[in-house]
Image 1 (cartoon, helix red, strand yellow):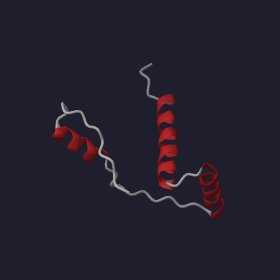
Image 2 (cartoon, rainbow, N blue to C red; image 1 turned 30 degrees about the horizontal axis):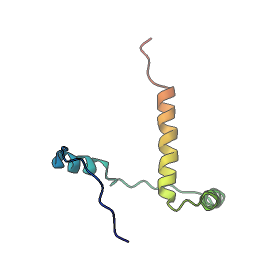
Image 3 (cartoon, rainbow, N blue to C red; image 1 turned 45 degrees about the vertical axis):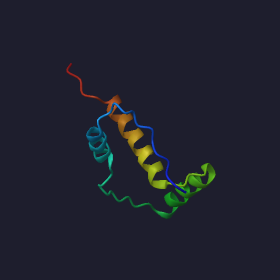
Length: 78
């Protein structure tokens, strides 16, 4: 199956788009270990919701939790 070309506005600088894409590239590996029960729970969740990419699921869950915690406990001046 061929990839579809994305519609890119003609008024956007191509160099800017290349820099933006390079900045979003994931090149840092982080390893997480799960026990058998945790792994089976993740597999069951993915099976029920028909999720094919566990890494995207875990990344989304972790980042949502992290950003929520940072937002709730932001530093205050007073």
